[in-house]
Length: 186
Length: 246
Image (cartoon, rainbow over the protein chains, first blue to last red):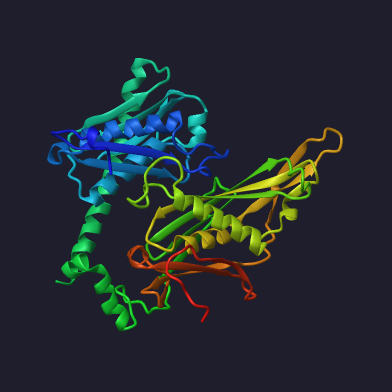
């Protein structure tokens, strides 16, 4: 139960919490939640989903999204967003569109999509992109590294293309699930 | 009609089923839910297991690290279990420090490890007085639908059987440990404790493997841990209605 004091009169409050298991990384992670990175991730997820969920339809309510990472091998933000999209759809919360995310980097004048842990640790620029595929609108774009603006276009395009591929997969999975569920319900 | 009755009078609804010696999900009173196990799926952990008892889903990941052995037992290592019940698994849990149920479960698992001698702590010692292994067993519940203790014990046992520790030699000259990642060996699991939980209904009826709803309606719970030789390792009866010895 969320606190009444934080209830918004005209829309729903979206609350995201990111937690990664202690065994998810190579080195055992001591603080699974409450540390700075987890709080930042939670905030980014909240900002992403506030852009996508139709919060006006549920005033004075709270939507909690809890994400638990079991194994981290790069692209955790993207995996969290994709998983949370499916979860929100499964819960029946109305959304503007799917939110599909992917990470991208730039190594040796080539844009790379969906970086693994080894590629992220190499230290090149990395970009996280969350996309609403139908309209092509960007829900969240984050990059904190040095990248020449001439290259931004290609990296963004690589991430967007990968996000759209994820959308095709998620769409197919959701439709199949609905088809199976409606067959069971008769 | 049945759904309405269930909401208004859940206990009566249950009693109707129990009178016929069965439960709403179609099980007998002594029947377990469908159990699935997936072992070794987390490659970053030294050992891992995912257990599903019906809808209850629990994952156990084990990480091994070095530590100095305890001063009062220089030839032993450590096994540190921790059960986490995040708000993700059920709306009854809030985010924040571990609640009462998680702490009780952690202590229960620690007792099971200690009493059943599932691994000898001496096996975890590398160099007496200087270096030993510490196994951090982190158990996370992903979906809470009752009978969490059974699932945690099962996941822990499966994960411990999956753990592979590399060979460690202490270099005589430098005194530093050299880890040989190419040579890994499994842990020596001495016993296989299995937990069975019961819910007590109306002070007389015992049903096995209660779901979340059944636990909520029950007047008491009982958990028994036995190993494969029929030896009792742990008996956990936290309050609730009294049971006679019979």
